[in-house]
Length: 492
Image: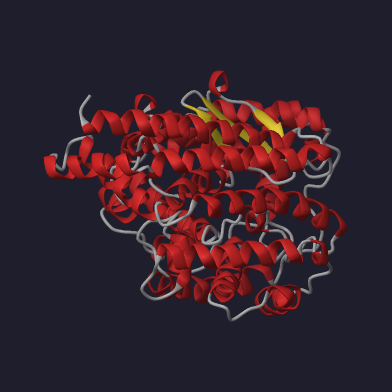
């Protein structure tokens, strides 16, 4: 077996361990009994350490060196795999296995502490866990190494090539436009939930499954479950699962959660299955991944044409929705109103949630913000940005699971996803003849096929900005999202 084949076999073995860990994490967030949490932390820590040891063994470095000397052609499958294996190997070998075990155990315990603290709306219960997560994240950044900000080292795990200095001007342009847009749009928005009603969970599940199927989600290779915080996960080449949460007075919470997670699932189901366990069988980045979820959730799901097409089916599944005609539903799902919860935010204010947390995360990792001060800082900055006062920690600083996961550097990818989604849709509209007509008729295959060709099939062959440039003609920019929101919501 030559060195490249040895690498393929080794990293497919590593993926077996990591996908097994993913199953345990999925179970932890869906069905795990409370008393089992500590042992689950030990299980995850054990698997993480084994995967780390296999992927950082000295022979892996030798095989990589041999492959690099072989000089594979740039357009080959071997070249991008070797490139990413080398990048990941160089980072992973900087982390001692004892550190990996401690980080995984800390995160597993922090997740449960976060759930309890969020339920009690009491940040103090989560604070000591988060302090340890932040401390370990700072250590990780130091071990990885960085040129400007330690946050760059953490962000590189999720969005290769992105740095604080790169993102700040893009985010500043977006933030300025959004603040003006929100003030103009939301000034006349009425209070209350315009589509509130009685929507039993079973009824919501029926409609959600119908929509996910229509978008192209393959239920023979996936399923929908219920969790505290919606997520999607890939447990194998033919096992991509999605989750949502429900409110029996607001059907749109679960519906748009499902459309969002279906976008993630479609990406995973579109990756080359034969390459599972190698970079070519993995997503390019989280910013690219998020572009898929936000595209289906907002550009498709919150459009007028979507509800013109699906209103009758929705009423059949959700009888109480009959009180609202398509126009009323459209106005309801397009309502722009500053609110507390990111995952329930309208598509105009959504990025403001991300930009707020990005600024706070950078401050935490750069040592400018202390964990104990987070609730006060969050509440003050949120009020200044959104114009509303945060009533408690549950809907404030505790609302998202990511810090308990140790996923510092993850949040900017949400806004990058929005920027990418707008840019991709702009290009798809010019590339696909009759796209608007097909979407209006509930025919989503042309768009899905375009995404499969331009994004999904490439895996990690290209870096995120290079992939966007190949798909759209330019690297990620803010202008397409700004133009999309202004046009959709009637502002110029």
